[in-house]
Image (cartoon, rainbow, N blue to C red; front, side, top):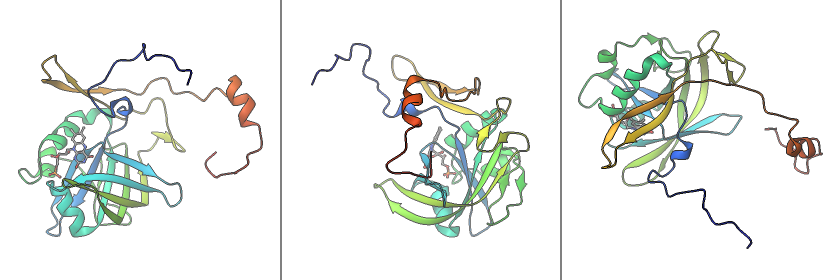
Length: 218
Ligand SMILES: Cc1cc2nc3c(=O)[nH]c(=O)nc-3n(C[C@H](O)[C@H](O)[C@H](O)COP(=O)(O)O)c2cc1C
């Protein structure tokens, strides 16, 4: 194989982190005792167009895990950039120890399809019912949620795109010092939204060709 030596790269210590910049999720659940809880999640991925589903990995030690088994429903909320403290708090403290919903003073907004509330302060909320629970390892399971309803803050998005002036929180990751000690979590802001350059030579040549296997997700 005629390949170049990887002189432009160095080894990274943090696994999947080149893919880290995303909107974090607050996963809201409700116990059979009606208590509300939420955790911060980054181990999730949207999967499939119709029906649209979400796969989220939830650790067995969390209160969220217990509540998911109790009710089989959850809401995923996309925080605004004003909710940084709520995101850090919910990812650090467990509902086993603190009533996080009470402590964070979040506004419970009525959902349309399930019995778990939306977060009134969020930029978007999606209602899911659990359609599958997949064992992953000793510490966690994957939950597959089917989208039942989506609620976007007025003016924040146009179709499936965030408007440039919307302010979703973007999670960047943790910064570590040379001894590996955490120096805190980092966040980014949405800037520079733009259309793909369809005049690029690669796209110009290949996107106009008929497809052998036409698909829905062009
Ligand atoms: C940025 C970030 C992302 C996280 N992602 C997940 C995740 O996807 N799944 C998970 O089970 N825990 C995740 N955690 C850890 C939980 O948020 C944390 O254990 C929380 O305290 C559990 O809350 P609970 O016991 O109230 O459910 C994450 C934490 C942070 C800070």
